Each structure stands twice: as structure tokens, then as C-alpha cells.
Length: 305
Image 1 (spheres, rainbow, N blue to C red):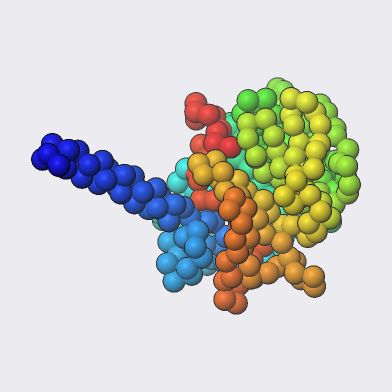
Image 2: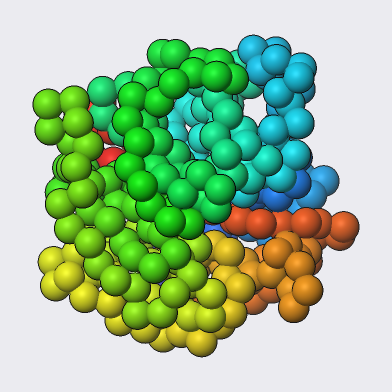
């Protein structure tokens, strides 16, 4: 074999090996944002708690008054936005936390807060579930335990909210319906309502630019925005007590979580594409998201879905 051919084969082999290593490293670098009980944290996809890259409790943010820290005893949603993480708690707390400094850039109390999302114009939407039964819109520049919302929209069992940059609207999930909300001249208006195929709306997140994925009490669905139609989310169509579903837009892998037969939480993270499970010792997980920071709406760039 000539020196040229040997060098060519060696070069191709090294290139292939490098590509495999690169893909493996990228896979291992995927991280998860987890909430449940009083702690929110980031861990590698493989679930090594000792390798947690970020963790937060309410006492880490001095801006949150001591008497309000108990409002974050049961965190139930966490969404990454650029340098920030948006956190809600069914104990009544809402906080937008700077990842690096842990300074709280916005906080307030909302009864049974179950999800939130950032809106253009420096606003935030919060789903106030049972006992509140509404979607509240706040000015992020005004924090405090008793700060008044700018707007309120009734929604029984409000559980999920997501901003749609393409449609320039807010999607809000309740027990029995999905709302499409538009903002005009400083006012929020429900422009369309969609009855859920079965009741118990729980988690709402983006599947792709045209579809939302959601869980209800005993099923999971996709909702096509362009077709205005629900369809079963085949892999989890008959799963009960699913608390969160989140698709990795880079790898297409899905992280999802469900409660046990007797509790709203569990110690197990579940995956699709490929299937898998990761158990966190003594974990009380409620929701899990891929740690892919979204763009803040209104900053002139497309929001990550």
C-alpha cells in the first residue's frame, strides 16, 4: 500500500473518529432543568446529581422577602430564558431569576401558580390554577408580594401558558379548554377557544413551530395551530398523570415526567427517542425541561420553541 493511500485512510479514520467523539460529547452536554419541592436545579441528561451545574432555592435571592420564601416550597414549572430562569410554585410564588447572580429580577405571589411565560413589552403571564382560576399579566418592572396584575382573564384550572411569536398571541391551557389570547391597545382579549378532547389540562409546551404538545388527566395530545385540531400524541396518548413533556429541538429526544399512582411527584425521569429512564435518589420531581434558553420576546429575535 502506498504512503498516500495509508495517509488517506488514516486521515479518514481520524476524521470519522473525531465526528463520533464530537457527537458523543454534544449528546453528553445536553442538560436538564428540573423542579419539584423547594429546589430548582440543572443536571446532565444522564442524571448525575453530583454534577449539578446550577441550583436555586428562594433564600438564594435576597430580593425575595424572608416571609415570602415559603411560597416556593413546591416549585412546579421552570423555563430558561437567555440568562434567566422563570420559576413558578403551587405554594404561590413566581420568580424570574438571573442564572449567574441568582438575583431575582421579578417576583410576586399568585395563588396556585402553575406555569408562566415571558411576553413582549416587559410583561409576564402566569397561570393561576384552582382557587385562582385565571391568567394574570404582570409588568416585570414591578415586584412585590401584593403587586397588582395589569390584566386578568378567567380560565378554570389554568395550568399552562406559552407565548407564540409567529401568531403574536398567548396560548393558555385550562381544565377543559385551550385559549388563544391577543393583546390590543393594552388589553388582553380571548379571540378563540378550543374545547379539549378530554378534560384535565395540565402541561403545555412547544412541539414545533406549528404544534403545541399537552397533557391532560389521562391522555396527551398535539394541537395543530394551522389546522386548529387536536390529535393523540401517539407515544403517550393513554398515559395518566403526565406532569410535563418537553422536546429537544436539537436532538428530537423527549423528556417527560409522570407522578406515581399515589403522588403528584416521582423520582424518575423518562425519555423517548430513544426510550430511557433515569432515577434521582430521593428525588421529588414535578417537571423537567431541556436547558435550552429561549430568546426573550420583544428583543427582536425569534423565540426558541
